Length: 251
Ligand code: SAH
Image (cartoon, rainbow, N blue to C red):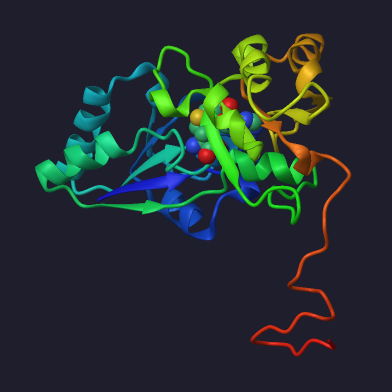
């Protein structure tokens, strides 16, 4: 059986208990290159076959799946963060479906959660934003027309940019075409939850310059929005005057 497992953002103890159990029992682990902490691979049993998918094509990954399946083994396909976000799992799953190879998916802590934790931030602040946009700057992978960064920026929502740390100048320009302005708070979080984690707080206007000064060009998330600012409203849920299914308000 093939188990797609989210490795979490970096710190090994952010792997789920289910993911850890699958890793310990795996006969083969195919992990996603430098973004997966090698400490996780140390959890595998002796003689576990370990492959780094960074140097493999989809076809090679699929043929490793096939070989292990024929040998009756258990394979963990270890993806960084949560596999559902830029994990390229769908094409693997569709191939497994076609060949009748059983699989399942175990979620992981995404780096966008790891980055928020590094900043002690809440994306969904009342009175600020109730939406989180997870996206990327267009690069070699095209982005659908309606999802251009300048379009998404019109919402002024809390935004997290993956795979874009090498293009901060373009990101900054595109963000400024929307509802954000040069004073809108932003942050660059490099290797969230790893020992070498770096957090740079800045604004949309100083994003590229701040990234350049910190020497960050990859393995980072760009976070943008007023959720990183000072102002917000109290939640209704914990307001003494608010009645919920569990608590009667005093007003
Ligand atoms: N599935 C992953 C994302 C894979 S795409 C997840 O859920 O996090 C790879 C991109 O994710 C990187 O280019 C970087 O933008 C981001 N990333 C992954 N791990 C990170 C970390 N620990 N800190 C900051 N960014 C990270």
